[in-house]
Structure formats: structure tokens, C-alpha cells
Length: 346
Image 1 (cartoon, one colour):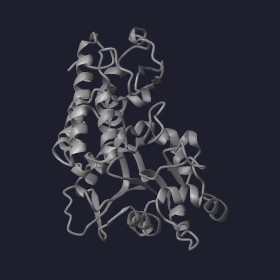
Image 2 (image 1 turned 90 degrees about the vertical axis):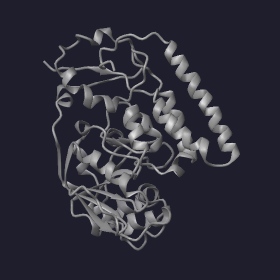
Image 3 (image 1 turned 30 degrees about the vertical axis):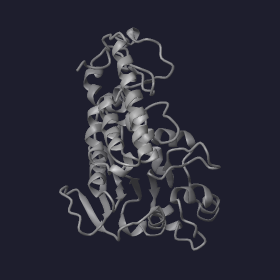
């Protein structure tokens, strides 16, 4: 009989022990423990939740995902150390035909699995987009390439759908564009698409994912027969601006960190992030998501940087956020704690 379990994942919905935990980080820790449970043995103890999903026995027994026809690639000349960390997370449960980091020539990578391709330093998003559209093809040899950035990586190899390889582009859906698929920060692209992008009529290149998926969508489909994944498949592949409704293969977006890592993992990750990210608007958004989901140490890491740098208004804002974090943590302490059958107590 198939073993199933139900886990509450959504931000703002707390586990029965009163703590919010990211589903994706919990999967790896709980596979073995949950796999041995009889169907329904503990599910009946769970309170009703508005959103849930079921884990089958196949997802509870982890095996290396074989993507030996696909290359893993990251272009990052600003923070290659963090890029290596992200790529290592992707390779932890997935086998690629190669892993390529495009970065400045003097960077030395200690991981022999990652090949370094030296490129000129990128000064802005425009230069990144130009490279990804017009120069990407000569840097990978797979039939497809999984493109990752510093703020996105594989979450659950068991959520991979082989149908993704039937399409030329798969990325997290957007809510605001004519063609919703999709985001390029964690995306799967075929060699056919990369070659088609050399068309001289494709000349407006920034931002690259918008130009590929929306601006030149019809040209690529009609002239080259490029196939973009349907929204349903893209939603299972990754999430970014639209919250997930179940397990996904990966994600993109610094502001989604609370859904991808535990608090302890988040602190280790943030130690490699450049301080200017913390003082940005995106850093503030990430900070709020972290403390609202109970990631107080990670939130405090960002807050300390925001309180010690920047102009007076930003420091005052940091003081206000310190107060909000404290109030949120105090209220959380007052909540009655009950044993959560899904997670081990720490």
C-alpha cells in the first residue's frame, strides 16, 4: 500500500508545535522517519489546514536524479563563491553531464566537479542579459541547460517531471505578462532555443527572460517551432512570484528564502551574500518574510547590516523592524507548544 503524508507548507501557516518551518528543507530530514509510518497513523492527528500536499513513497526514498543530458550553468562574476554554493546544492541530489561556472579568470574553485569558464566581468543587468541571449551556446554541451543564479537552486529532485525535457523553455510562471512562462533565474533551456536566439531580429535583450518569453515569444514559436512549457508544468518545475501550491523542483528569488532553507541554513547562506543586497528593497522584503515565518536568526543577520550601514532613514527603519521582530517573537513564545508528529523536536 502506498505511504502518504500531509505537510503544511504555506508561509504564515504554523505547524502544530507553533513554529513555521519551510516544507522543502524539512523533506530531506524527514524522509526516512515518515517512510516507516503506516498510512494514516499520524495524519489523523494533524489539524485541518487550508493548503496541503501528499508525499508518496517514491518521494520519501531519495535517489540521485539522472539528468545526464543536461548541463548545469551559472553566470556570476560578482560573487562566484556563492554561485559555487548554489551549484553544489543542485548537484547534491542530481547528476548532470557537466557543471559550468562562468566567472572572472582569476577565480579558483575548490570543487573539481565545477568547470570554470573565464568571462569578462559583468557590470550590470544589461550585460548579463546580452550574454545569456547571444553568447550562452558555446559554454555548454548538453541537449538542455539548467540556468541558475545566486538566489535559486534545486529544492526537491523527487519533484522533477521528465516532461520538462520535451520543451525548449521551462521557468517559474509570472502573474503579470501576456505569456506567463517564465522566469529565467532558475530555468531549463534547450540547445534549439539557444541557437534560435541568434536570429538577428532578436536585438532587444534586456531583461533576457522577458525578451525570450514575452517580447519575442511569437517569433520564436512561429519561426523556429520553439515550445514553451504549459503553466501547469512550469508551476511544478519552480516558483518565484507566485507561491507554490505543492512540491516543486526548484525556486528563484531571494525573497523566497524562508520557503527553501531552515533558519540555521539561512544564516550560513546569508554569510556569503554581499551586504548591499541586505540594504536593498529586496533585502527588506526578504527580512520581513523571514521573521514572519519564524526565521529569527536569519532575519537578525540582515537587520544588523541594515542598522549599521546606510543613511539615517534606513537606520531608523531598521530600529522599527527590530521592534516588529521582537513583538513577533514574543507572541510566538506565548503560543502553546504541542508535539508535532511531522518534525523531530530540537
